[in-house]
Length: 297
Image (cartoon, rainbow, N blue to C red; front, side, top):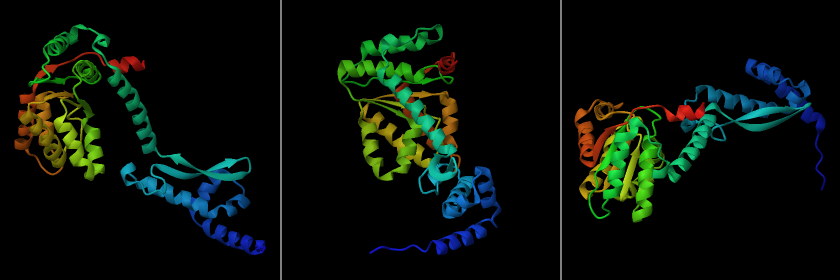
Protein backbone atom coordinates (compact mmCIF):
# COMPACT_ATOMS: atom_id res chain seq x y z
CA UNK A 1 0.00 0.00 0.00
CA UNK A 2 1.54 3.30 -1.08
CA UNK A 3 1.43 6.14 1.44
CA UNK A 4 1.00 9.53 -0.18
CA UNK A 5 2.53 12.59 1.46
CA UNK A 6 0.68 15.86 1.17
CA UNK A 7 3.67 18.00 0.20
CA UNK A 8 1.59 21.18 0.20
CA UNK A 9 0.54 20.56 3.79
CA UNK A 10 4.12 19.77 4.82
CA UNK A 11 5.37 22.92 3.13
CA UNK A 12 2.66 24.98 4.82
CA UNK A 13 3.57 23.57 8.25
CA UNK A 14 7.26 24.27 7.63
CA UNK A 15 6.43 27.84 6.68
CA UNK A 16 4.37 28.28 9.84
CA UNK A 17 7.07 26.85 12.12
CA UNK A 18 9.76 28.89 10.37
CA UNK A 19 7.90 32.20 10.76
CA UNK A 20 7.31 31.41 14.42
CA UNK A 21 10.99 30.52 14.94
CA UNK A 22 12.18 33.69 13.21
CA UNK A 23 10.50 35.74 15.92
CA UNK A 24 13.26 34.45 18.23
CA UNK A 25 16.35 36.65 17.88
CA UNK A 26 18.63 33.71 18.76
CA UNK A 27 17.15 31.56 16.00
CA UNK A 28 17.41 34.43 13.54
CA UNK A 29 21.02 35.01 14.59
CA UNK A 30 21.93 31.35 14.13
CA UNK A 31 20.45 31.27 10.61
CA UNK A 32 22.38 34.41 9.72
CA UNK A 33 25.60 33.08 11.23
CA UNK A 34 25.64 29.80 9.31
CA UNK A 35 24.51 31.57 6.10
CA UNK A 36 21.83 29.20 4.84
CA UNK A 37 18.93 29.85 2.52
CA UNK A 38 15.44 30.45 3.82
CA UNK A 39 14.33 27.21 2.21
CA UNK A 40 17.02 25.21 4.01
CA UNK A 41 16.18 26.89 7.30
CA UNK A 42 12.51 25.97 6.87
CA UNK A 43 13.42 22.29 6.44
CA UNK A 44 15.54 22.25 9.61
CA UNK A 45 13.61 24.37 12.11
CA UNK A 46 13.35 21.56 14.69
CA UNK A 47 17.04 20.63 14.44
CA UNK A 48 18.16 24.24 14.61
CA UNK A 49 16.06 24.72 17.73
CA UNK A 50 17.73 21.62 19.19
CA UNK A 51 21.08 23.31 18.57
CA UNK A 52 19.93 26.48 20.30
CA UNK A 53 18.68 24.50 23.29
CA UNK A 54 22.00 22.70 23.66
CA UNK A 55 23.96 25.94 23.27
CA UNK A 56 21.85 27.48 26.04
CA UNK A 57 22.75 24.51 28.26
CA UNK A 58 26.42 25.16 27.54
CA UNK A 59 26.19 28.81 28.62
CA UNK A 60 25.17 27.75 32.14
CA UNK A 61 27.33 24.63 32.33
CA UNK A 62 30.28 24.45 34.73
CA UNK A 63 31.68 21.09 33.64
CA UNK A 64 31.04 17.68 32.10
CA UNK A 65 29.56 16.43 35.36
CA UNK A 66 26.48 18.65 34.87
CA UNK A 67 26.10 18.46 31.07
CA UNK A 68 22.41 18.47 30.02
CA UNK A 69 22.91 17.79 26.32
CA UNK A 70 21.87 14.54 24.65
CA UNK A 71 25.49 13.45 24.20
CA UNK A 72 27.58 14.31 27.23
CA UNK A 73 30.27 16.87 26.39
CA UNK A 74 29.02 17.52 22.84
CA UNK A 75 26.80 20.07 21.10
CA UNK A 76 24.42 19.20 18.25
CA UNK A 77 25.68 21.65 15.65
CA UNK A 78 24.80 22.51 12.01
CA UNK A 79 27.32 22.20 9.20
CA UNK A 80 26.78 23.78 5.79
CA UNK A 81 27.81 21.58 2.85
CA UNK A 82 27.53 23.74 -0.27
CA UNK A 83 23.83 24.63 -0.19
CA UNK A 84 22.56 21.83 2.07
CA UNK A 85 22.59 21.51 5.83
CA UNK A 86 23.72 18.58 7.98
CA UNK A 87 24.26 18.18 11.71
CA UNK A 88 27.06 16.72 13.78
CA UNK A 89 28.19 16.58 17.41
CA UNK A 90 30.97 19.00 18.26
CA UNK A 91 32.94 18.69 21.52
CA UNK A 92 32.42 21.51 24.01
CA UNK A 93 35.35 23.27 25.71
CA UNK A 94 35.16 20.93 28.71
CA UNK A 95 35.23 17.86 26.48
CA UNK A 96 38.25 19.27 24.60
CA UNK A 97 40.03 19.88 27.90
CA UNK A 98 39.17 16.36 29.08
CA UNK A 99 40.47 14.82 25.84
CA UNK A 100 43.68 16.82 26.09
CA UNK A 101 44.05 15.62 29.67
CA UNK A 102 43.51 12.01 28.56
CA UNK A 103 46.13 12.35 25.81
CA UNK A 104 48.62 13.87 28.25
CA UNK A 105 47.78 11.19 30.78
CA UNK A 106 48.34 8.40 28.27
CA UNK A 107 51.75 9.82 27.39
CA UNK A 108 52.61 10.28 31.05
CA UNK A 109 51.39 6.78 31.95
CA UNK A 110 53.64 5.22 29.31
CA UNK A 111 56.64 7.12 30.67
CA UNK A 112 55.82 6.03 34.22
CA UNK A 113 55.14 2.44 33.20
CA UNK A 114 58.46 2.15 31.36
CA UNK A 115 60.59 4.12 33.84
CA UNK A 116 63.77 2.37 34.97
CA UNK A 117 66.67 3.36 37.22
CA UNK A 118 69.04 3.49 34.25
CA UNK A 119 66.85 6.22 32.73
CA UNK A 120 67.22 8.59 35.67
CA UNK A 121 69.05 11.77 34.73
CA UNK A 122 71.65 12.49 37.40
CA UNK A 123 71.84 16.15 38.37
CA UNK A 124 73.23 17.98 41.37
CA UNK A 125 69.81 18.77 42.83
CA UNK A 126 68.84 15.08 42.65
CA UNK A 127 71.89 13.77 44.52
CA UNK A 128 70.13 13.24 47.85
CA UNK A 129 67.06 11.54 46.43
CA UNK A 130 69.08 9.31 44.05
CA UNK A 131 71.28 8.24 46.94
CA UNK A 132 68.16 7.40 48.95
CA UNK A 133 66.63 5.47 46.03
CA UNK A 134 69.81 3.40 45.56
CA UNK A 135 69.94 2.61 49.27
CA UNK A 136 66.27 1.58 49.28
CA UNK A 137 66.76 -0.68 46.26
CA UNK A 138 69.89 -2.32 47.70
CA UNK A 139 68.32 -2.96 51.09
CA UNK A 140 64.70 -3.67 50.20
CA UNK A 141 63.19 -6.49 52.27
CA UNK A 142 60.06 -8.01 50.68
CA UNK A 143 59.14 -9.62 54.03
CA UNK A 144 59.58 -6.63 56.35
CA UNK A 145 58.57 -3.00 56.78
CA UNK A 146 60.41 -0.71 54.39
CA UNK A 147 59.85 2.94 55.13
CA UNK A 148 58.90 4.83 51.98
CA UNK A 149 59.50 8.40 50.87
CA UNK A 150 57.56 11.66 50.95
CA UNK A 151 59.14 13.44 47.98
CA UNK A 152 58.09 17.05 47.59
CA UNK A 153 59.22 20.02 45.57
CA UNK A 154 58.32 22.35 42.75
CA UNK A 155 56.26 21.31 39.74
CA UNK A 156 57.84 19.26 36.94
CA UNK A 157 61.07 18.16 38.65
CA UNK A 158 60.45 14.48 37.91
CA UNK A 159 59.34 13.35 41.36
CA UNK A 160 56.86 10.76 40.06
CA UNK A 161 59.31 9.45 37.45
CA UNK A 162 62.06 8.94 40.04
CA UNK A 163 59.87 6.93 42.39
CA UNK A 164 58.20 5.01 39.55
CA UNK A 165 61.62 3.98 38.23
CA UNK A 166 62.49 2.58 41.65
CA UNK A 167 59.16 0.80 42.10
CA UNK A 168 59.28 -0.73 38.62
CA UNK A 169 62.70 -2.21 39.41
CA UNK A 170 61.50 -3.55 42.78
CA UNK A 171 58.43 -5.05 41.10
CA UNK A 172 60.52 -6.83 38.49
CA UNK A 173 63.06 -8.14 40.97
CA UNK A 174 60.77 -9.27 43.79
CA UNK A 175 57.44 -9.82 41.97
CA UNK A 176 55.62 -7.67 44.53
CA UNK A 177 52.34 -5.88 43.84
CA UNK A 178 52.84 -2.17 43.19
CA UNK A 179 50.07 0.41 42.80
CA UNK A 180 50.65 3.95 41.55
CA UNK A 181 47.63 6.25 41.80
CA UNK A 182 47.15 9.93 41.04
CA UNK A 183 45.28 11.16 44.12
CA UNK A 184 42.96 13.79 42.52
CA UNK A 185 41.83 11.29 39.88
CA UNK A 186 41.40 8.53 42.47
CA UNK A 187 39.03 10.68 44.54
CA UNK A 188 37.11 11.84 41.47
CA UNK A 189 36.56 8.29 40.22
CA UNK A 190 35.51 7.00 43.63
CA UNK A 191 33.03 9.85 43.97
CA UNK A 192 31.56 9.02 40.56
CA UNK A 193 31.13 5.35 41.49
CA UNK A 194 30.51 5.00 45.21
CA UNK A 195 29.65 1.30 44.77
CA UNK A 196 33.28 0.62 43.85
CA UNK A 197 34.80 2.35 46.88
CA UNK A 198 35.16 -0.83 48.94
CA UNK A 199 36.93 -2.81 46.22
CA UNK A 200 39.26 0.07 45.33
CA UNK A 201 40.19 0.71 48.95
CA UNK A 202 40.95 -2.97 49.43
CA UNK A 203 43.43 -2.91 46.52
CA UNK A 204 45.19 0.22 47.75
CA UNK A 205 45.19 -0.78 51.40
CA UNK A 206 46.86 -4.11 50.68
CA UNK A 207 49.29 -3.45 47.82
CA UNK A 208 52.85 -4.40 48.75
CA UNK A 209 53.98 -0.92 47.71
CA UNK A 210 51.75 2.08 47.08
CA UNK A 211 52.57 5.46 45.57
CA UNK A 212 50.03 8.21 46.23
CA UNK A 213 51.03 10.67 43.55
CA UNK A 214 50.47 14.43 43.88
CA UNK A 215 48.76 14.41 47.26
CA UNK A 216 47.59 17.90 48.16
CA UNK A 217 46.60 18.73 44.57
CA UNK A 218 43.07 17.42 45.11
CA UNK A 219 40.07 19.45 46.25
CA UNK A 220 39.99 18.66 49.96
CA UNK A 221 36.74 17.31 51.41
CA UNK A 222 36.11 15.60 54.72
CA UNK A 223 35.06 12.47 52.84
CA UNK A 224 38.18 12.33 50.68
CA UNK A 225 40.54 13.15 53.52
CA UNK A 226 39.05 11.04 56.33
CA UNK A 227 37.16 8.21 54.64
CA UNK A 228 39.51 7.57 51.73
CA UNK A 229 43.06 8.84 52.36
CA UNK A 230 42.83 8.38 56.12
CA UNK A 231 41.45 4.84 55.82
CA UNK A 232 44.11 3.78 53.32
CA UNK A 233 46.96 5.15 55.43
CA UNK A 234 45.66 3.75 58.71
CA UNK A 235 45.44 0.24 57.25
CA UNK A 236 48.86 0.44 55.63
CA UNK A 237 50.39 1.75 58.84
CA UNK A 238 48.83 -1.08 60.84
CA UNK A 239 50.11 -3.66 58.36
CA UNK A 240 53.54 -2.10 57.94
CA UNK A 241 53.19 -1.74 54.17
CA UNK A 242 55.57 0.43 52.16
CA UNK A 243 54.04 3.72 51.05
CA UNK A 244 55.37 6.57 48.93
CA UNK A 245 54.06 10.07 48.28
CA UNK A 246 54.83 12.87 45.85
CA UNK A 247 53.60 16.41 46.37
CA UNK A 248 54.24 20.01 45.38
CA UNK A 249 53.73 20.83 49.07
CA UNK A 250 56.06 20.28 51.97
CA UNK A 251 54.59 18.60 55.04
CA UNK A 252 53.67 21.84 56.77
CA UNK A 253 51.92 23.11 53.65
CA UNK A 254 50.12 19.79 53.20
CA UNK A 255 48.98 19.93 56.83
CA UNK A 256 47.50 23.38 56.21
CA UNK A 257 45.85 22.27 52.97
CA UNK A 258 44.28 19.19 54.56
CA UNK A 259 42.96 21.32 57.42
CA UNK A 260 40.72 23.38 55.17
CA UNK A 261 37.64 21.83 53.61
CA UNK A 262 34.51 23.41 52.19
CA UNK A 263 32.65 22.24 55.27
CA UNK A 264 34.99 23.64 57.94
CA UNK A 265 38.52 23.96 59.25
CA UNK A 266 39.74 20.87 61.10
CA UNK A 267 43.40 20.83 62.07
CA UNK A 268 43.01 17.78 64.32
CA UNK A 269 41.97 15.42 61.53
CA UNK A 270 44.60 16.85 59.20
CA UNK A 271 47.20 16.22 61.89
CA UNK A 272 46.14 12.56 62.07
CA UNK A 273 46.80 12.18 58.35
CA UNK A 274 50.20 13.82 58.72
CA UNK A 275 51.16 11.55 61.63
CA UNK A 276 50.48 8.52 59.44
CA UNK A 277 52.50 9.99 56.56
CA UNK A 278 55.43 10.72 58.88
CA UNK A 279 55.30 7.19 60.28
CA UNK A 280 55.33 5.66 56.81
CA UNK A 281 57.98 7.84 55.14
CA UNK A 282 61.20 9.80 55.15
CA UNK A 283 60.92 13.40 53.97
CA UNK A 284 63.07 14.70 51.10
CA UNK A 285 62.72 17.93 49.12
CA UNK A 286 63.49 18.03 45.40
CA UNK A 287 63.86 21.44 43.80
CA UNK A 288 65.08 22.24 40.33
CA UNK A 289 64.21 22.85 36.70
CA UNK A 290 60.77 22.11 35.32
CA UNK A 291 61.58 19.24 32.92
CA UNK A 292 58.07 19.25 31.50
CA UNK A 293 58.44 22.83 30.30
CA UNK A 294 61.86 22.09 28.85
CA UNK A 295 60.47 19.18 26.82
CA UNK A 296 57.71 21.40 25.42
CA UNK A 297 60.16 24.07 24.18
